[in-house]
Each structure stands twice: as C-alpha cells, then as structure tokens.
Image 1 (cartoon, rainbow, N blue to C red):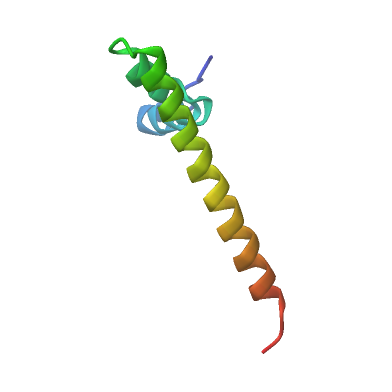
Image 2 (image 1 turned 45 degrees about the vertical axis):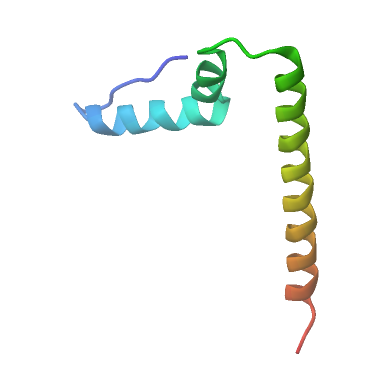
Length: 71
C-alpha cells in the first residue's frame, strides 16, 4: 500500500491511509488476532456477525422498498 504526500499535506495523507486501512479491514484483523480465540468461540462469533449482516440487509431492503412507494 502506497500513499503519496502531495504539497506537504501530511494530515490529508494520514486521513487517506486510515481510510484505506479501514476499508481493507486491516485494523479489525489485527484486533481479532491480538489474542487467541478458541475455534468454538470463533464459530459463534462468525455466526453472530452473519446474523447481524442478514438483519441489516433485510432492514435496508425494506427501507428502500418503502422509500420508493408514493404516499
């Protein structure tokens, strides 16, 4: 990953770096790997996250459908 500093704008380059790291999921991955996680705990966490994503997608779909209908 390479970030170029243009015109001595170091703060802007740092913001861009943070955004790229966030988008790639690097910080989250580092936090997860900080401590050992038992396989059973890991499976349960992944199932919880999948449920959360599913609920969110259903909620977003229902909002977009209701937003498209005229009142």
